[in-house]
Length: 272
Image 1 (spheres, rainbow, N blue to C red):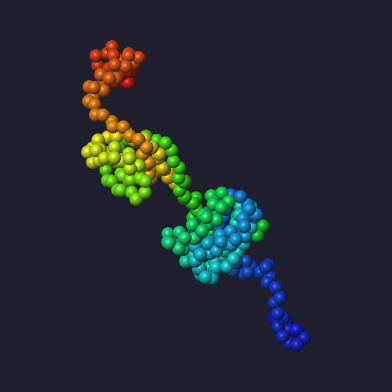
Image 2: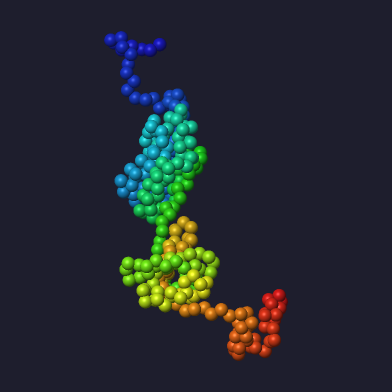
């Protein structure tokens, strides 16, 4: 029976009784979504970065009823909590691939890249005070931000000339078809173009010398030749296999000239 005060009123509950098992059950019914950063420390991050990371996590979870849970040191942990009846929606939002999610993941990547951080993940589970967090499920590993690096180097390439586009500046723009079929945009001076004119679209292989401009994506490490600036070229003369063998045998220092069939000897040595 509830006791009444002297005026016959029920006493006001001034604090939540945390020993009440029903309270613990209600808290456990919530599900926490955690952004855990395994690089660096929380004190390394600017306040604006922490705010952006929390905001991005909330947008990915995408539940209006979600509330702030905790931000703590160690492996930087930023968490929000979701009511029981919103769990399925929140889970689906984190797992599915959408334009909104990609946008928020990019926000996280950009914030982490400011500090050279790359290792972060979104998980769910139950964060409890003074206990190590053990995620129930890793939902998403945040990939390293993929950005492009550019560099140039002196390089010679072999290929064929096609497509000419007159430039308004001091250079003209052409296309080189490499021996593997790839096409590379190239440029050269007006003077050099005059020398190149006879070799357009005649299937004549040329050796170009110049400056190659490459791009490289950090995640794939795949190089792409984006542009080539031609400084000079030579014509690669067509020779038959017999002519090449004769020339090869004529190199006295190689000692191949003493063999009537040097290729047969070479093949035999490879088999041995």
